[in-house]
Length: 183
View 1: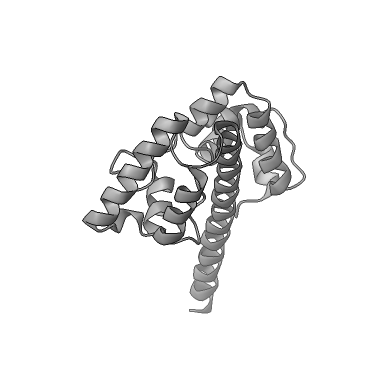
View 2 (view 1 turned 90 degrees about the horizontal axis):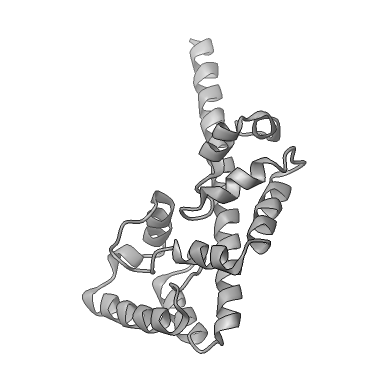
């Protein structure tokens, strides 16, 4: 079970191993967050990570945004991104949908210099495409900040998933023990 006590007692290597993937290909955030321990809650830990990004240079923020794959792209992605995009149906686009996403992604990328970022969990491909169509009209400064807000949301959802997965794994282990004890 992933507890705050476990997190607060983790070595830097263990901490980065656990949380280095919350922000896409940006373990440096977890490395810096380690120094802000102990945490009184997972929400506080997430907020420390968000503050690290907020206090980063514009170049570091841009690098973080650019670490995210373009939606619907068939490129090397982190396992988190693969799972998230599959959940939204982005890995199963029809050829016409793929071409529409690709064209809009290219237009977005050329306008802003970074990929379209959206927390896809709970959204389908139509909602995502509609959001991209709307946000492409934003000024660059607004879209830069919107991308960061979406990244914070993605990291929060990934953290919640880690907490749930660890809790479910612990509960399953407990149930197996209890079942064996009954035999």
